[in-house]
Length: 366
Ligand SMILES: NC(=O)c1ccc[n+]([C@@H]2O[C@H](COP(=O)([O-])OP(=O)(O)OC[C@H]3O[C@@H](n4cnc5c(N)ncnc54)[C@H](O)[C@@H]3O)[C@@H](O)[C@H]2O)c1
Ligand SMILES: O=C(O)C(=O)C[C@]1(C(=O)O)C=C[C@@H](O)C=C1
Image 1: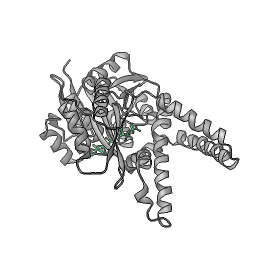
Image 2: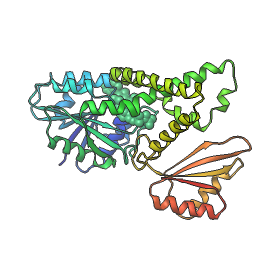
Image 3: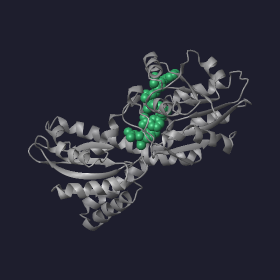
Image 4: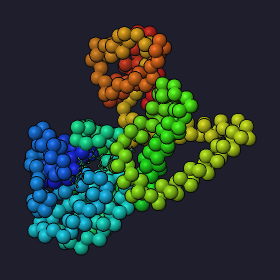
């Protein structure tokens, strides 16, 4: 069914969703953003069909409204929506990383025309704004739906249909389940990543070379510390109670690790690391989220001109398409590691065989 879809907030997430919705036959995408440059860019690129000037007018025109603004702003919009006189039904959804207060606001609605199904695509980036948006951001990602008390299954199905071009997989959870799980696998890790960066920064004065030693491991684990601080401050405060309780658990966990080291408990330490490795290695890899979505190969390369070209040139000659490429670690005069991601395991296995035939050292991760 053709729908008029209003997307408020055309940043990383809203812009990426708009790129998918505007591909759908017959759908009219209306964009609204406080940043005029963003709005103009999206309009110029055909990602939205109309730029709205007035919230109330745009809401009255739409069949579906997607709130893709910072969480506190989304909650303000939810309060504002119930004051608008509508003469046709409006299905509202959001993309917020924390759901408790969002659903509290929507559950309070007494408006006969309004219904709400919360949404949260579990994919993103440390980058922000419309320029970082991309249509394939949600490919293979989990897209969590959290229906409000007034919503029915049909409304969730309308959203699944609306976002069908994203390639995401939909799962429904209660608000509490969602907020607990995202606190564990997204919000708390973010807090730890920022604290690790602070720890390194603290050692910088006494060890000025420390920044040059920050290689693959540190960069991998702290990438998310480069995200938009304002957005994450909002997320931390929206999920404050759960994060406080997780900080207490973490402090006891660190006491346990401290005990292994102070007691020279090598068996305990080995078991701790082994258990973590087994759990981490068993996490699903074909979904986006904590673990990359693609099929990865790790290729050892030498630090000399043309080294990377030799690898990708051979894959190109064999007509194998690469989804992503990243230099994980390369130090002057020493070998580095190239992480190449493929969309299918066939491409991954074929590339491994090809590169090994040409004397590259390759490790496969599935
Ligand atoms: N960044 C991620 O990785 C990620 C992933 C999933 C969900 N989310 C959620 O998505 C939402 C947006 O995050 P983002 O990363 O896209 O941020 P962003 O900064 O890239 O985009 C936010 C957009 O909202 C606009 N905006 C802000 N206030 C507005 C207002 N009052 N009216 C209209 N437009 C306004 C901004 O101009 C900007 O274009 C947040 O609620 C966040 O929790 C983020
Ligand atoms: O990839 C990243 O940079 C992200 O932080 C994405 C991430 C995550 O924690 O996985 C961040 C917040 C979201 O609500 C969903 C996804």
